[in-house]
Image 1 (cartoon, rainbow, N blue to C red):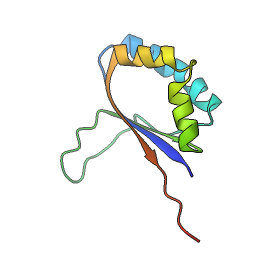
Image 2 (image 1 turned 90 degrees about the horizontal axis):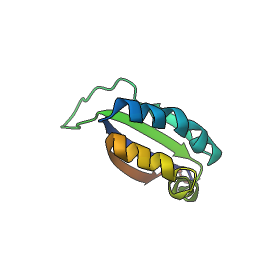
Image 3 (image 1 turned 60 degrees about the vertical axis):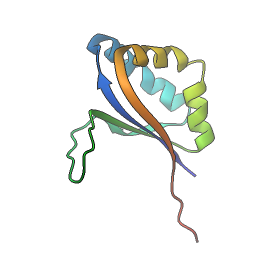
Image 4 (image 1 turned 120 degrees about the horizontal axis):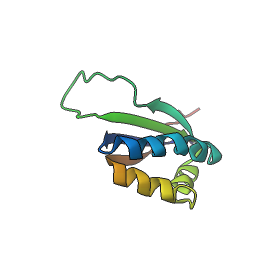
Amino acid sequence: MPAYLIANIEVTDPAGFERYRSAVPAVIAAHGGRYLVRGGAHQAVEGNLPLKRLVILEFPTMAALQGFYESADYRPLLELRLASARSEVAFVEGYAPAG
């Protein structure tokens, strides 16, 4: 069953974040992930959803997603992101209809 990383990111250091943004796609792909949303335009239509830069990644399984996030190749990039942005991140299990 697919799993998703959903992140709401507020960039605080554009130069540092650009280094992260340019390096991370290869690491995501190496772990079987792909972008579904990568900071495009958004419009709130109900409630107060304070989105900044929305990112949604899809991985084939929750184990693959966790493997990516905890990997040695992502660790330096995670540190770079944490130093250059404020983030809210969640892992969400996908939906597979029965039958």
